[in-house]
Figure 1 (cartoon, rainbow, N blue to C red):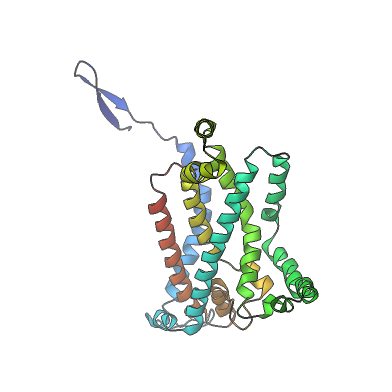
Figure 2: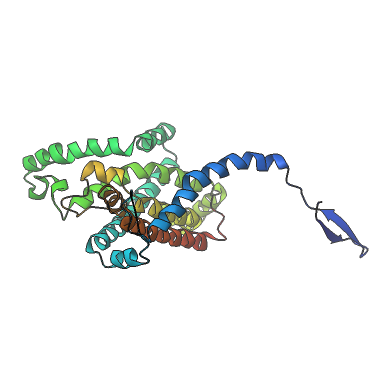
Length: 303
């Protein structure tokens, strides 16, 4: 039975208006995806959360121990260090990626030659596997860059950045940004192309310089895209794993071990329930970031 709403006509009489009915075929299309998501994501997630309240090592017998794993996780220096590194790395990478991508988008939407070809070139890192990129840059940071640093007489470049506990994070930020810039760039290009040309023409008539147009027209009108890129980028960088594994494998020591690496290392080391508690905490953090995204972007028309 379809529901109806009543609309008031000019003469004051109301007439029923039928709401649009959803065709059953749409639910049929939704069912396979919903079933696969439930089997592959929801059910394993619920099982994992349950085992975070036990002393399970992943196999064999287990006992229910309550919140002991969670209490221990909040006081574990290794876990706290991994969260500190992950958030610091994510913030630094978000800033670098968005600054570079925005400037490139401004250049690639201006009146320059071969901008279509340049866009294709800048997107190439997006389609290369992260682990492959990491191994290539591992060779560059471990061999080529030290040779250049020694030739130029630059002491801190004469040795591998990846072997320096204080500087290894810089290499990870650079490589991650190199792969992440193309996706962010595409969103910025879409946002800049959506800005009406008439606005810039009016600014030219008023005598505004290109720098003034950038600061007073482009940035304000592209603010929604900036917010979306910042939030989405931050969420993605929180899950950093493959590039870090290929570059430093969490080293030197544990200086560059992310939360994801800590969790997986615990799974392989017999700390299944303990690291599942850590994963549950990390999941809650990700949910909070997602809620932040919804609250910040609510009401914006970008994308």
